[in-house]
Amino acid sequence: MHRNILINITSVQKQVNQCKFLYIFFIVFYEIFLFYLTPSIIFLIFFWILTRSLLSFYIIIVIINCIVSVSLHESLHLFYFNKYSNLSNCGVINISFRSIYVTYPTEKMKLLHQVFISILPCIFCFAVGIFLMFFINLFSFNFILKVVLKISSLFWILQIVNLLPFTTDGKILLDILRKKY
Image (cartoon, rainbow, N blue to C red; front, side):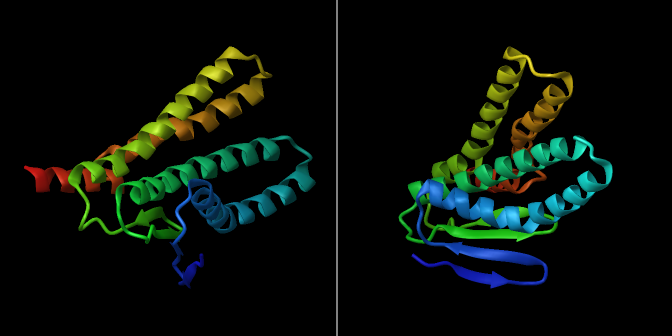
């Protein structure tokens, strides 16, 4: 139950060895939070002190929601990898300024399991976004909060874009199709 941490100037890699979903989610969320959110919150606190505006509070809501959606997406990749593979090693979380992604060995896995690992996180996050949008429309909030929450739910809905061929998940799906046919 240890983590191997490799820190480069351009990226942070964490080896996750225990594959319980909440454990994985909190590790991914913690790393993304430290890497992206901490500087954002410090900037927004100074912005709030200078302007005394609620805009900084709404921006923090949007940023946290974005980070939670990405964390859940990547955690689901690791969770499904652990579920469908016989390996004790879960994969590597790669966090850099440009991207966040998970790498895991797929040599000994069935193609159908690789498809599930690529597709299910996107579909799950998309479903959460649809549910959030429905929930926001069902209850009445003040106008600005409603707009902020709708923008936040769009981060969840747009996770489905990860299945397009120019993204990592889409490239994996194309590679699987090339292997199969």
